[in-house]
Image (cartoon, rainbow, N blue to C red):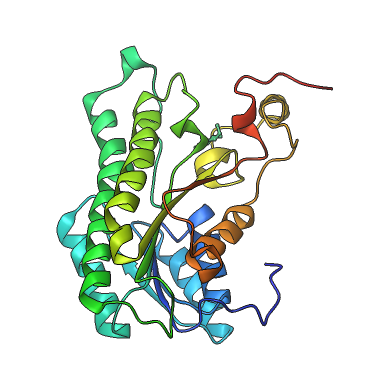
Amino acid sequence: MNIPNDYRPLTGQRAIVTGANTGIGAAVAEALAHAGAKVVINYLSGLDQAETLARRIRGRDGDAIVFEADVSREDQVKAMFRTAVEHWGSVDILVNNAGLQQDAALVDMSLEQWNKVIEVNLTGQFLCAREAAREFLRRGRVPELSRSTGKIICMSSVHDVIPWAGHANYAASKGGVGMLMKTLAQELAVHKIRVNGISPGAIKTPINYEARDTQEEVEALLKLIPYRRIGEPEDVARAAVWLASDESDYVTGATLYVDGGMTLYPGFEGGG
Ligand code: BGC
């Protein structure tokens, strides 16, 4: 990743990134480590990928732990935070990233598909944010490390504002993430805990690309992006580093759209 080696605004801080073995989560974990943070690489399946990433971080003098946990399970989320605190004393940054899609037309969508997506994408963010806030409050503010007591970053999607036919469960979960994020930001600001969101557009990740591999499909997607390029996970990772750092100390309750302008023109068809 193209970040200068001496830019390490997160030195000494400890981060948990959920769903960090692939895609946006992996890029975020790597960028936070590059910026000086120790990171917990959470995964549910894909231990090999998580370990490869941890090795790469350690190879650059970083510190990483891999931890298997289903973010929709309270006991597993608690165990993950306990492990981070046992290893490193506390947690300063949570990136609520784990998420999935299970697409179906409304009339075909099973209750199981609905529940699964809501449980992972929305309930998972609640459970992790709650544990993070509890830990931040237990530890209190450490001004030498950061101006805030803790930072929570909620990964949402452009589909927190753009409706998405055929994806009712996913769009509902991301709309929920947006309001969860703002409410937590309002509630926790008095404790100097900052909560922000990132809403990525079309990014080259497994969640996105598995479903879209023909040239025509890629062309159709590009027409929806005024900036005319599909995003890279690193585009999102750079935003996460900024939101986790004191550079953004006066920013809370905000959503950063990292989407090449997709939300500017819902249904935008061209411009040549
Ligand atoms: C989805 C992608 C989609 C993008 C833009 C994301 O939230 O996960 O599959 O391409 O939104 O529509």
